[in-house]
Length: 238
Image (tube, rainbow, N blue to C red; front, side):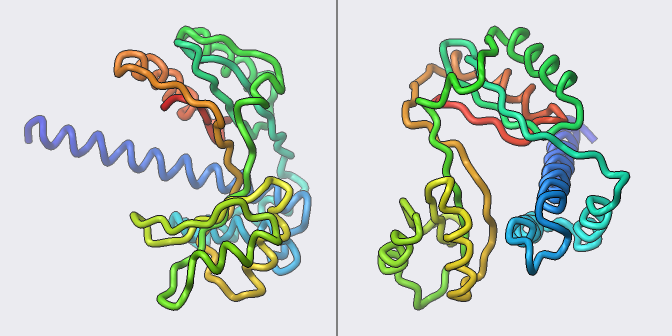
């Protein structure tokens, strides 16, 4: 069937791999949410938002329900959320969020990834001056919704920035990390269709790289993203 078939097959397997990784990530988020706030999404706002995230990536409803049931059982181990920080090649700051049931395994693997790709792992908090942690909500755009007016309304609830993503035709709302609960509450009260809710690390200082330098850094990012314990990877490469 030739190289074209092999290329399509490789891309298909990569897409399936990314989908499986996303489902695993959401499954871990469900465990943490259920352990901290219970299995009822009506009374657990964090779980309610995660279920919306699952819908957004087409995670089957049965998978979500099984994950909630499993998280409610005594047999389910607790996950710990850990952040690792370091520098990749060429001085690029890299922050790695992990959710793990084995911290010794996680730190050994993360350190190995950094070392093998010419980077160094550092101490907790060393990149606080580079990354700001924000909450982000995504809602459906309706014909009668004025984005500027919405931003003005949400400022009082902790929103920093509200804008229309033209590519996805959805509205993105960024706010302070501590504003998550108040923003979720007001968006639900106003009846907006919530498409997703999460937290992000936004770099306030970025570095421009050459193509060769970017390739060096991307080797580390790819290795980290393939690690089962890794939930998110952030960097300040431009």
